[in-house]
Length: 206
Image 1 (cartoon, rainbow, N blue to C red):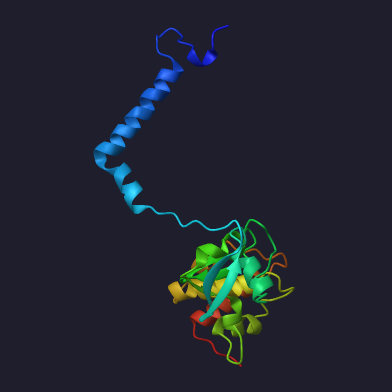
Image 2 (image 1 turned 90 degrees about the vertical axis):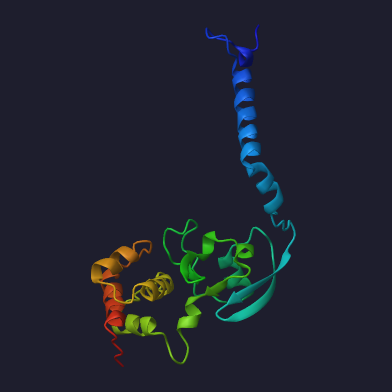
């Protein structure tokens, strides 16, 4: 029986010949444009693992020298190695927003971010927004009863802080759109929005 991979059909061109031709064309294009040489010369992938590898993570303004397996998420390192438990493992796909942290000024899901990928970046967790002098966002959550069961609260507080850093004069509609990646099963969305609006208006009750 004829090998189906060499079937010519009616046009006289085999699938194998077509694939070889396209591969050759792609290689020729890369060489002609210098793309192949650029990739070979400039891209030097960092190889880690499979065992734990040393990594320095800057978290809340402090450097931590850690040994991290390449498969470990930032959330796992925060919770199990550093005892920073504010970010919550509510979902595995980041759909809840409960594991939100700020990385280089942008909100990110700690449970879908590899810890080794955070070396050299500045990480901010919800713990940095508390303390003796809480961040205005955390205070506004208290004023407006934005907590309820509390599982979503750290992620919301961090997301609001990150959003208002970029949009200090945000409207209610913009706040609602900006926080649509966070879920609250208790349904305190209205209170969260009110807390964010309090910060926008410069409210410092208490």
